[in-house]
Image (tube, rainbow, N blue to C red; front, side, top):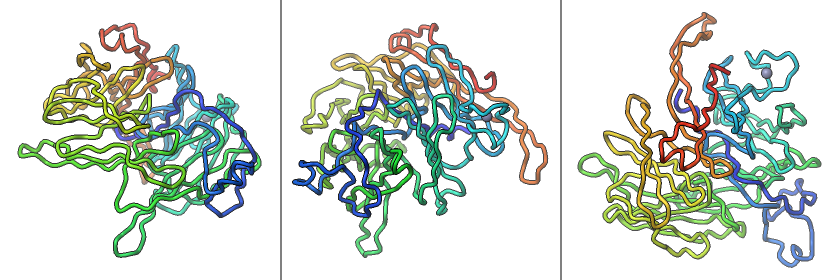
Length: 430
Ligand SMILES: [Zn+2]
């Protein structure tokens, strides 16, 4: 069940709620929904989000606000999972359900979400949470469900949203959820259009969907889940299989899918270089030179490169890096052993002395996500246990399943191997 972690949601810091004017959601025009003002009248084509645009999900483990995190469970319940609330100060967790008398053991529970479908949870600036999820088989044209919840998990409002593909990263500006999806054209040159769709969270237009912008591309773009002030980032990267089976980076391009529908190039990496994008913490991009080990940071405004740190050459930096409070945590696939490097600008790479066993391999605990207050969510271990479930014929069956165990660390605790970190209660003990 290791793959079930992938699509939990993330919200960094407080979203700025700026001018939440009434949305013009019945318009099919993609030129924008923004409230009419002098400025907009002189520049009708320019759409802008209502506040800072933040990624809601991607490869993050959980959504967070302050000292609370919302995490999707690993243990199967009635063909699905339970969303849970974690207190980051104590590590206690409970089911994200406020239904009176609920035993949280089947799909009638408000915390229950169906297996195999993506779902996104987004804390909003007013203290409520938006939950967006699909039902039915992935790829089927089923409507989505949008819910507004309070912090205890009570459903305050629910709406059915027109069918939409839920995949990868979604974003929020606090008053809308945004999806970037791909459309493949029928033409010979196979143009791919990336479309930005807005789903309204505002009371008068809750759940209404509208196309905001689109960009035509010659090929797929990978969305690293990073926003700038002007748009969302998209990347194209390439690797080559070396003689000994090692993946060697072969360059890449980082684009901005800008609100004005342009696609400026922000950064480029050449042969035997990698563009490398932390998925959690501060928005940032790096360029790593495979032959020299030089790691440069890309200025997302100017496109300039500055030396960040000198790493070992020949590293395969994998996805899932975290950049927070000046600390960069990179996960490295090292053949015999995976490990995590922590480095600050101009500093020397460091390792945690802690060791865990994951998938039968010894490695350092994996820093998976930046939390507020400079804290880190760290994947510690895997808990295996026997689980009883009903199989397709309705027969009670027993099988081995597992859940990840999580720890909350400061960077210093992590680097010193300090065991006074906070352990998140396991789902089995909850
Ligand atoms: Zn329940």
